[in-house]
Image (cartoon, rainbow, N blue to C red; front, top):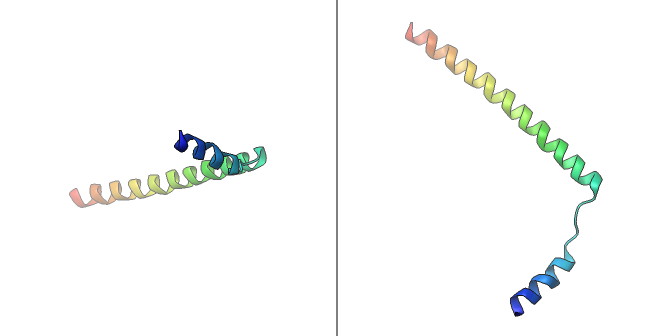
Length: 56
């Protein structure tokens, strides 16, 4: 019971993000994922072309 009591006390100290902050963070994550996707797609294509060139 003491553990749960401490959990509830700590949860009262938590500050949750506002709606605007959640939207901002969500957009940041989506942009980061799209940039990473583009980067790895270009690298993958380059490696594929290099291997194809070397095997010919």
